[in-house]
Image (cartoon, each protein chain N blue to C red):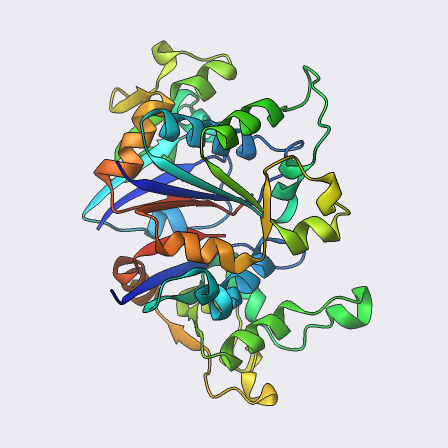
Length: 137
Length: 99
Length: 119
């Protein structure tokens, strides 16, 4: 029987000090290959939502490779967009930190068609309601 | 949505918790989150308790830190054990999150 | 009875969140539920064999062995483990290792998921 599981990954912590935000992104991207463990017709569709200090993960011009030899969280956001995952960012939390939308990661450089969606928290709350499962990071 | 939340931190630096809304909301205070149940801040109960929710505190984490049910700052907080938490997760809520 | 999948990123030593996750898994199993457990990031420390019990450090090996023997599927993120130098030969017996897609697939077939991702 066909079953599409909708997961919402809510990232609420800033990048780099903790591994958790990047693990959220890598786990979400792993949905691409989860089908090898599933029955025909079963699938998992994660959506990423960045709230609170988590919005700091989606900034552009991250230079983790230059300074630490690590792929940046920005790159993981771009990769998520490239594989057509929805990436939601809380509007109020960007504004509270003085971050304009021009500072957000852009997946088009990698060929992504998807773009980051900046939404009010109420809309992200509605996504939580609609999801089958919630995973907070 | 029937949503359960497990709070395990004493100090909070983000506002996700304050903004969460659900038709039925339950908050389980575990780990260092139990301090919201037993310690006041500036003479007043923790603002965590201001939320319109059912509140639970994990007895074993409370006792681990030297507190008992007699120390609860508000009668609306119900002490529970791990078995009861399983029921809250598996039976009484649609989703459960660890903030 | 239903299926619970627990994910945890916290380390065996240095955090009590993994203790919580294992206690919850045990309690759920005792109530008759099926339980899957996924450890990723620092949580992969749980998979290391040869853990020694001290009274000042969390020690979960015996409980985890019992859970596995009781049918709980306990699995570590392979890449997270390898990056920390925990190789297959270092892994506790019957403690599985898979890539992250295993966790997502288990979520699909679970009635409830508790993800302990933040600290």
